[in-house]
Amino acid sequence: MTLPRCTLINASCTPYYHCVSRCVRRAFLCGRDARTGYDFEHRRAWIEKRLLWLSQVFAIDICAYAVMSNHYHVVLHINSADQKSWSDTEVVERWQRLHRLPQDFEAADEQTRAHGIRLWRERLGSVSWFMKSLNEPLARLANKEDGCKGRFWEGRFRSQALLDEAALVKCMAYVDLNPIRAGIAVTPENSDHTSIKARLEGRDRALASLADAPNVERFRLPVRSVDYLELVDWTGRRYQAGKRGRIDGTLPPIVERLQRSCRRLFMDEMRHLSRHYFRAIGQAGSLRKYRDYLGQSRLKGLLS
Image (cartoon, rainbow, N blue to C red; front, side, top):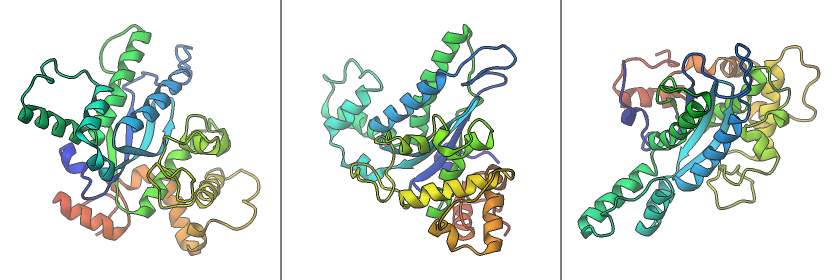
């Protein structure tokens, strides 16, 4: 059953969302097209630069991202506190960085101006408008470079609600490990155009901060950097069965607390996160509440 985007993305249910945009048919987002021989690797920088710039304009924090050959993943946080704290002047200034103001805006009456500012404030906190502002310019650039017209993306984008902190951290690790699963990187620190490499290289000022990060200006995630990095590395080693060795020292606390059977379940979910869930990712209780909110009798990932 198709549901409107305003139902699927609602900050009152959860501020965290995993979004994916995929190219249509054989269109190449990045990398080398084996069929034509063309190299589109430079487009990764387009996406990463635009993505991080938009996070400075919108009330949207980037928790994780990975740019792949024909799609990209991004985990977003709707920062309603920031959105509400902006003055009207700041809202106008931010909107001007994206769009030209209407010619008659300055001369409009107070009520018309207030309505416009209220609308722009709402859009600057919208995941849909964030994704539109990311995808539309990229499609135009790619089509111009390819010398063609028409649709570049399969659709607007796919979104999954992340209903609790466990789902958030799990999905962040899933996104950061995409290049490793695809066989184009060996370790997280060599995974180009991912949020984990940006964090490791100190290029993370535009990202949501991990709990112990010194940058206090950004929204903080509910996990310490050492725990998150160890979790990603621990999970990545088990994705590749032939990889030698284990992580030295203790496992991250989030993994140490799991029983052996739970670890197997955790790894199974990490391998098939997109298959096990559809509209939302979370623990059973969170999924039931979200199912009831949507008014559906069933929700993928929930057995009962």
